[in-house]
Image 1: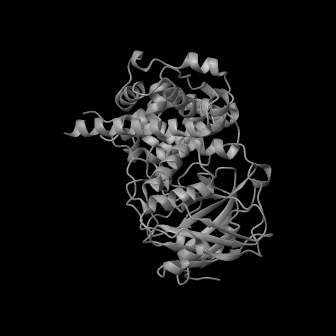
Image 2: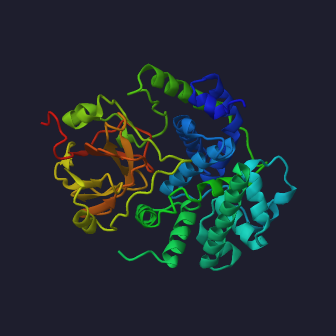
Image 3: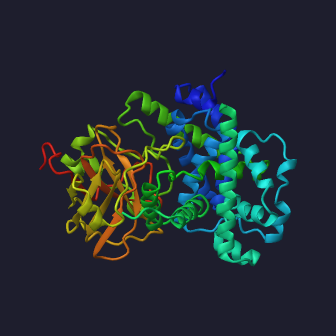
Length: 183
Length: 277
């Protein structure tokens, strides 16, 4: 089995670095744009995320998660922390609710979803439309829970419950898939 | 101690869900740390894979290409980082070229100011934050009391380090850092640390553990809202086994990977400061 990009990076294969940037640069940049919003801050954040990635490359275990999931985890952690410190609302997240509803993807209709993303899509499909929509706004668009509650006209507690239960559902799906994979 | 209830677990799950969507302030992070210690089936990164997977599933296709100029900067950062790591592991970490508050630029190197405080760091020239292990959660730490007073009272094996100000404006700082290897938890108690404007800069704690690595461990960022006593839980991002020195810098909001700023306040663990003075 060939080594992943991150495993090659961890092993000191400098040629893999550029390949890694090309493979995941768009993902990290898109996450930064969505979660940070401000372009200059997003650019700084992308640089930080990649340094984090180089530092943590050796921790990547392909038997635990897909590379894209690992990269997204590192990126999200850094970006959420940075956004909270900046106390700025994501500019791109400030789309209208109608836009967000229209943009809500048909998760089963997507192709090329692999590994954790595919299992997450399966779990999301089991949620009620409102739950899935709230989870999308909170996780993908980075909207604060109170903003989601205000814009959707539902109680803050309901928003939080949707987010919590949605993540529990996805986590259970991922755990079941992993268990099945090793059995 | 009272056994955690189901509602406690539900509360922790909500905090963990908030953590991967909105982020948490330092107080809530401390609460998460304490609750995770009490409920070892949970950990701080509990929902991170799920949130990442949701992001990838729902945002699939919404990927913009990395701008060419930014790609070039990322590659340049990488080249410096790897070149430094290969040439001199102790100091081989890139310093990102990014905008910083003007008042944080050009300060004296803290390695020069700190003197004996950095002796335990075996010549480390820059502080490198090593973020928490991502895929393999650390062993659940022993349950930690949730207040500074209770921690000190109930943790006789905790080590103590008294603060000393090293920069003008910080000479009045008093207090201590307390840390328990067994609990993997601790607190900072600070008196006289000047308030910071969190929108412009935040205090960041660093923990020197030469048995672990020459690079200090990031202890998290915190704010001081007013003069007087401040108590802050320590959020070590990696396991700390034998800390010898605790130090505080003032960094851009959110903290930094590499600190070039002056060491403002530091404290050596009692009995650990070879050549002190």
